[in-house]
Length: 106
Image (cartoon, rainbow, N blue to C red; front, side, top):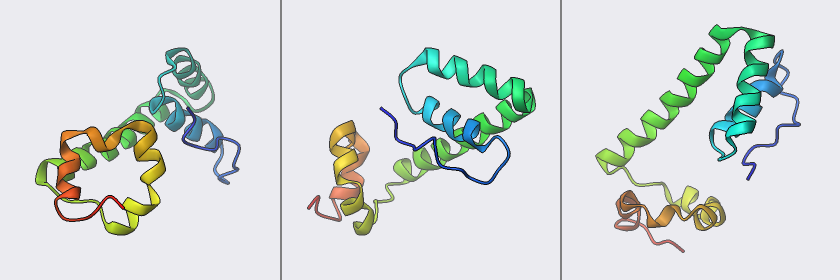
């Protein structure tokens, strides 16, 4: 499942590879991830791959910290993400209670 439109021009040199990498690390296709990692290293170098992975890991870390602290998702985001949360079954995660204790899922 592609969560990101990899065809949009970001205006950054090799930006499509970085966007594709973002898409690949959120997906479940390991062959695609391997392919994108190889392309990223070939076009931008190994340091770019490491930097891109570090940025992605930092975003994940921030979400985990927010969940651990019990910070709820804002009502505007609850509405905007309802479809994707349903599709990915995110509301079944234990940390979802942090949001739904304070706000309705409607």
